[in-house]
Image 1: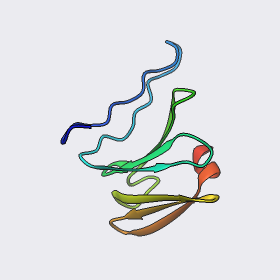
Image 2: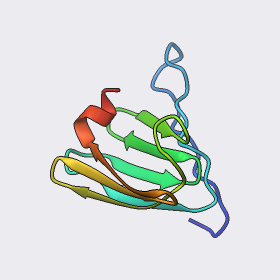
Image 3: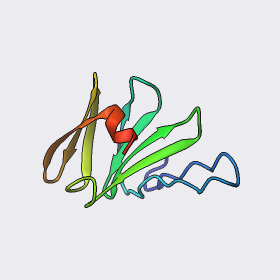
Image 4: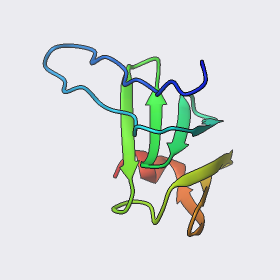
Length: 98
């Protein structure tokens, strides 16, 4: 991705689905999800993109996260997010079903 380019949302699968958006970020961190898809973190939150189903689930600052996400690690059942306010641990599957 060229420097400074923003992450674009995936198009909806059909016209009946609203367009999901990945939080707009100037910088992003990525982590592969063991169950498929990719986690994307940045200044406005966190998203999980399931590319096979064209589905995006977002978690935002300050509702779901205390601050901007700087780094991510998917480890077993958990997703660890290093934020400006400290370390946050999510149950990966529960976060996708919120």
